[in-house]
Image (cartoon, rainbow, N blue to C red; front, side, top):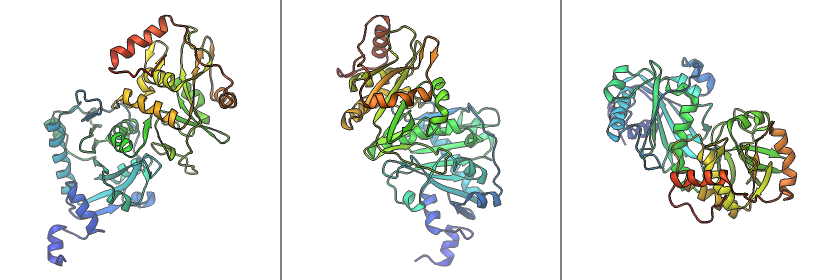
Length: 401
């Protein structure tokens, strides 16, 4: 057992948990005085937390991404930045720790530990991450670590060679290290933080049998519907969506929103979907108002994400995913769980589909009353083929227009 004098040498000042201090030391942060863990909103406010102004468009740097392409930040740059960040957190009197998760289902989530120099940052991040017991994070085999440094010197950014947005800071993530750094006001850019967390959590979620999809959830009676759609369509359905945020985890356990929905009343997880709706926008007349898809067709249209002449692979806002592998896994989920899939033309002529329209279609979808999609060929089909062949290698033979 450590003597009292040795404890004081290891951890100057009394902290709430020596176990926590050891854990933080393993992440490069040596507690200088106290580490406050999992404080409530009122406790954070008592420590000086205030509601920070929301920001958007801050630089997001990611390395070690799943696509194997070029990284936004080099391994050496990230290592240098991380060293500066942990030195900063080790130099201040108090650090604030918050435990949470990406994904509302404990079976397929990614545990997260946030280490911050500011209680205000935790107030913001606690509205994004799902709550989880600190023991679950401590005993997890591959938790993500988020370092928040709101008061680090601007010179650090310059020394590393990264660009910040004025005095607002930036976001940097390393998938291989399972770590995220939020510099300056980076924590205030919710969309940037979610993008980075999705990139980091993807490998963990996949390893646990989950599928991370850029979809929303609709509920009609006992039926759960996955909706893949362009942003304009999402806005017209917003009042009926379980969550306005894109991002769900689909697994054998059901459907779980990736981030907090803002609705404290729940539910936080849903049963497996019965229907997947892929909304496209096409004025050529090739894509009908609604048609049933085979799993191979659904995977093909999912991979393309066609919207008015442009393609958005896997309908995804998450830049750091392997869309082809995701499409393969999506087809497997449709087959394994017998999920019906439909293609819907969200904007045909002067008509724009609404959430109410989609829900009214669900009974007929479940009854399989809509005809199967029969391609008419032509320019649109060739446009799909040309794009996908130029973008992806090794498209499975089972995929079809």
